[in-house]
Image (cartoon, rainbow, N blue to C red; front, side, top):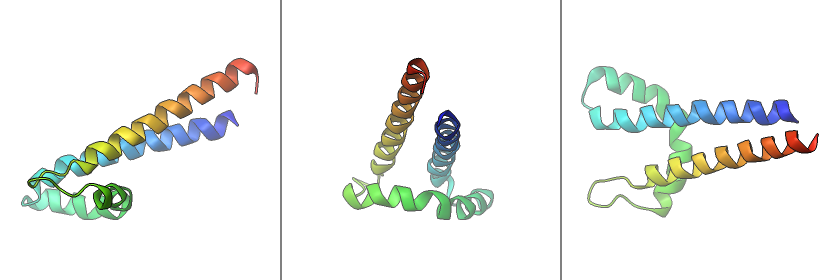
Amino acid sequence: MNLIITSLLSFLQIYWVLLIVRILLSWFQTAEWAGQIISFLSPITDPYLNIFRSIIPPLGGIDISAILALFLLQFVQSSLASFSAASLASGF
């Protein structure tokens, strides 16, 4: 059980970094090198981000939904880490 949680936490950490990179590169869409990286990351990150974009539309050209997506992912990570620590303490 601990291996599954540890693997899931590692996956979520990597996915969080990919989201950050995707969000930061969206500021440089006109750069050719950024477009290539965005085209690689979009199929990976956009399905998750689109969930939040459908809830919160961009306000004045600023996409606040990405912030909510990052907060939720961070919350899930910390919840899993707490669950993992609790299960180790109880011996499961």
